[in-house]
Length: 258
Figure 1 (cartoon, rainbow, N blue to C red):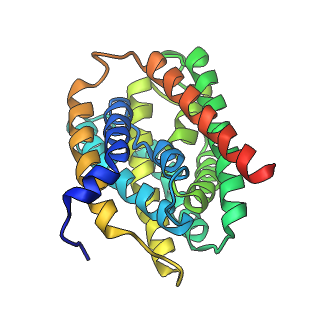
Figure 2 (cartoon, helix red, strand yellow; figure 1 turned 30 degrees about the vertical axis):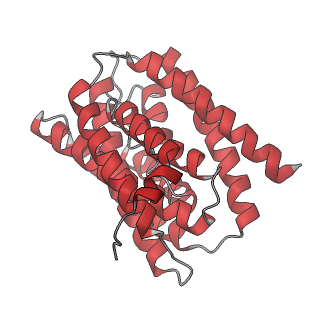
């Protein structure tokens, strides 16, 4: 249920609106939804961790839906390769989203997950190849999709931030098709993870704030889709994002481990 929005709500959360807008623009320009960075920002607020996961997934869905539409029009999907990768991730994302986890465990898992994502994104900047495209077996695609889907559903992100570096490292396909696949993977698993969270009795969303954020990321996502890679190269963007995620992950781990 959506509520009437007040100017005071905008004023109190202006920094969130600015950060979410920037994240949506940057991530959508390379085919991502921004779920990991939404989590990183929300983790430093006073929102309950159950609300944080749901809000991040909702924002993910809004942004990557636009990406998938664009890539579909450009015929960037090879469904024979994409479907095995995504199919097994769906039930595992649901299970991950359904699991009840404590607040401390959630933030520790989130910290390590974001740190891992930052490292893999930084490494992928140096190993992306446009040639020597490999064809992974259906069983490997299923295994990768299952593991990433489960972790993504538990933490509250679509999984593209894990999937894309893996596909780059294995020369799965061209960078643009990898971005397209990551977008579709994020969309499917964000929806599955959100359904899993909704099935959990502890599910809750601060709709008054989330509704504003959804509008903001929708606008940012549309801008990012049009800008694409004209202003920032994928390498520079991934490096800047990796630094941000690593900083926040270390700050979260420092808070909850020490």
